Length: 81
Image 1 (cartoon, one colour):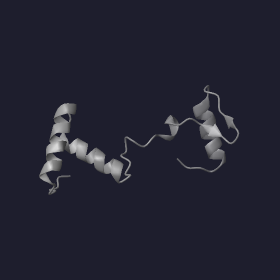
Image 2 (cartoon, rainbow, N blue to C red; image 1 turned 135 degrees about the vertical axis):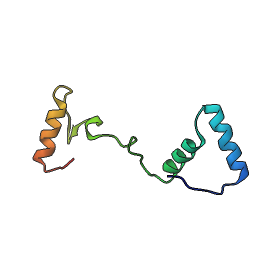
Image 3 (cartoon, rainbow, N blue to C red; image 1 turned 90 degrees about the vertical axis):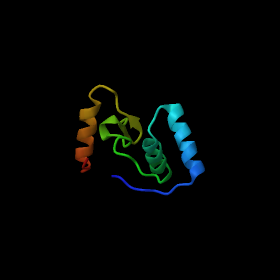
Image 4 (cartoon, helix red, strand yellow; image 1 turned 120 degrees about the vertical axis):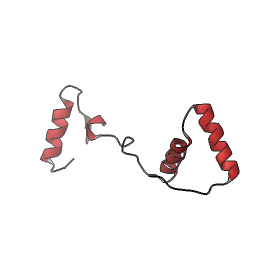
C-alpha cells in the first residue's frame, strides 16, 4: 500500500545512507523498523508450528517421527493449528 509520510530531513538522510550502505530499499528499512518497534510480527517472521522444537512437560521428543508424534499429541489435547 502506498502512503505519504512527512519525516524530518535528518532522519531521511540517515535512512538513505543506511539503505545505500546495506544495498537495501528505504521502504524496506522503514517497514522493518516499524514492525520491530511496534512489535508487529510479519508473516514470514512468525515460526510455523512444524518449525518449533516439540517439547512436552518434563521431556524432549526424539527427532525421529517428531512431527507425527507432535501432531498426535496436539490432537489428543484438542489443540487446533
